[in-house]
Length: 149
Figure (tube, rainbow, N blue to C red):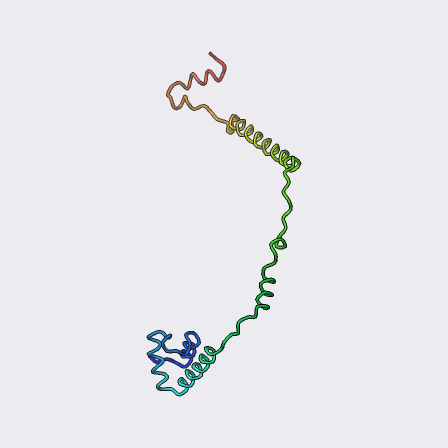
């Protein structure tokens, strides 16, 4: 499968003009394209020229004055970074805690009291069916309900 010019351009943009940096399969396909197409050869030549120009560029070392200015702007003195107020432990700070704690305790006790008392209230109107279940004792239960001993 042959490589297109767009694929070659993407390969050069990602890996540069040096063939050693290209993946093996892409290198074989690109070599075939470069041998067959003058436009591809021109594209690689332009990329090599750009790589050579970038490789030859030398950055001048920063001057000591520039370095000092950059460091002073980047790192302000420690005292100016952030100021924290002094911590005070006064009983006034804890006095606002007690009303909230008392309200929480009161709500807990009310919830506990309601939970215990609601359980003892019957929720349904129940009928005694033990006479039907146990057998012929239904007459005894009926007589007890009518008030006869």
